[in-house]
Image (cartoon, rainbow over all chains, first blue to last red; front, side, top):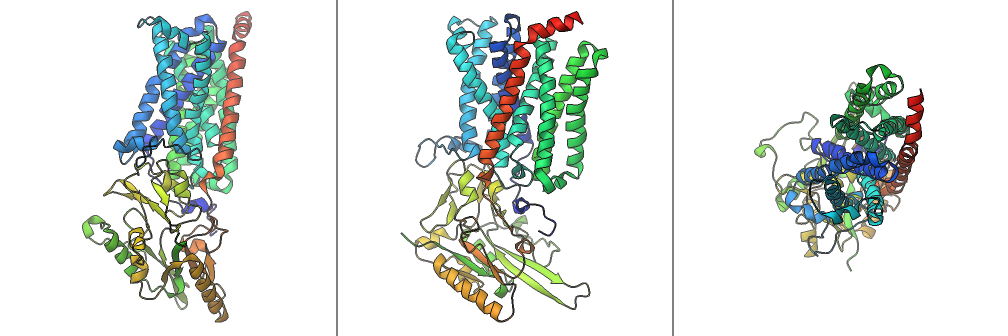
Length: 301
Length: 265
């Protein structure tokens, strides 16, 4: 192929830039924080509930920001509703084999779940009075069911973006089926990191927070393995990263965002409590850079 | 129901006059770039450079010369949307703005498109782009408006050498096969058809006669549907979610014991 490693190199870039990078980041946080909040609600201890509330507090604003970013990114933002309602028939617009169509519905439905949990968390914290809201959170039966469905939807929102990139014909994005998996694992790692950072700020250093820190280390290790698998699965297309983007991927994502945090987790005792926050800040930075590199490195080809 | 219609482009008789580009722009009222001031690319006679939202036809100029320029040839090709039978753009479009017409061609309805650009990333040929005038994705419609009243598309009508031919796919395939046989008989053994049969995306309703490898013309040798990654991508995502879930449950279920262990140390 005249040195061209894949037929994907003949497609054109869709001009998905900074707005999409930020959407991937906030969408990942929205889904990931909700999932972690559900996990803490269902498997944590009573004293961990403020941590779970924090997850819901982060999730809802992040999903609102995500919707805003996606709408602004359209060339015709006033037609955003065409994703949900077919504009010339006014029937529901649902196309299960289009990742973007499914994603639009997932964002809407997850947004509703996230909003309910957000209100419920505010009520529990005494920020407003509506006792019935407690039914929408575990341990109430209805709350548990809603949480599990919401948690699954949260992961969907966090991961569909990777599948969306794979369901194109762009180099890198569509040359591996692993981007969805990478984005889901990364959503969990950055969400845990953000909850840890904010919990520290509010002084909620509970055993649950330590569990989250421990979990984050395992998730970052998994993310590292998945990223290596992505690079291997790209085969000769991975040569497209032999440039500044590849350097950023190696230094920013792998070294600063994964290996240093893992090193700090296992060998960073001297930093004391700051170890946890430093690790979290680096993981968060690495997660952002990961999305930046994946979007822009393929856009520039 | 009309028969499937399309283009057969015989690149061996293209003379690079760009009448197709001009006719397309005129009929479809596509704007010029740079306020109409010509910008020279420095790449042969090709100043259009690529297909996009306001260039629905693009004549490619490929110069193949030896170092001493004693021997060489021009490859000329008028590129356009391939109106694939299995169309990637149509498949991913989340607003149903992209439709298949009664002529088996693929058309973007500008009033339904919201400019999400998923189709741009999905097209394996790099055909689609945003038209800045409308803010929507646009490409060749195979002159759907002309075809509906029984007229030939503007580009093939304007082509002075019959390099671009319009007709029913069946008739065009037969004509193209005869032309390949003729060229091969006359010694042009490199002649072949690109996208004329069902092997490539179910068949391209705009197919080509080429005399070099597809990539020389900027065409993908092996274009694929974007949904090839949908199932595998989804499966791996579920696996990722399950692994993260297990790590989470393991850490949280156990966290009382782990804390006590840490405290003992």
